[in-house]
Image 1 (cartoon, rainbow, N blue to C red):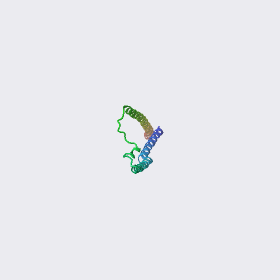
Image 2 (cartoon, rainbow, N blue to C red; image 1 turned 90 degrees about the horizontal axis):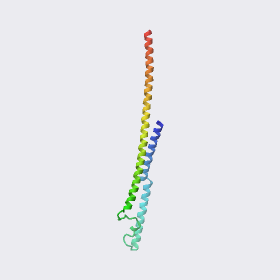
Image 3 (spheres, rainbow, N blue to C red; image 1 turned 135 degrees about the vertical axis):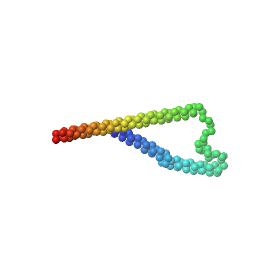
Image 4 (tube, helix red, strand yellow; image 1 turned 120 degrees about the horizontal axis):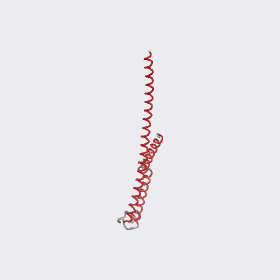
Amino acid sequence: MAARAQAGEEAAKEKRSATQNLINFRTIGTRVKLNQDFNKLRKSLYGKLGEIQHAHKLGSGWAESFFLQDSTEEIGLSQLDKKIGAVTAELDALKKQREALATQEAKIAAQRAQAAQQEKKAQLEALQKLKADLAAQEAALLSELSEG
């Protein structure tokens, strides 16, 4: 039982470590460097397109037209339904993940409680045995004193 609890604790520790590694990858790791390199390239390309625009007297906004622009159109009902469906699916997945984690933590807590209970029973048995041994020694001493 204690081995299972320890295995559960190790698995939880590994999960925390993996989560931290993922956070590091997204905030200070290679992903950030890739984004920085991409942004440098994008800005350089925008500069080159601007030079072409000015050299050939193209209309304003020509260089910007090569890059994705925010849409000013309002979102339609079908697009909202798709977004709601995606978010709902993500929420359901997170709820299942939470339920699994809660179940796992409850099992670990139950195993710990059972291990603690078994340890207390073992301590009680040891004390009862010691008490019986002391009672036997007391009886032997009383017997020797009453004979003498």
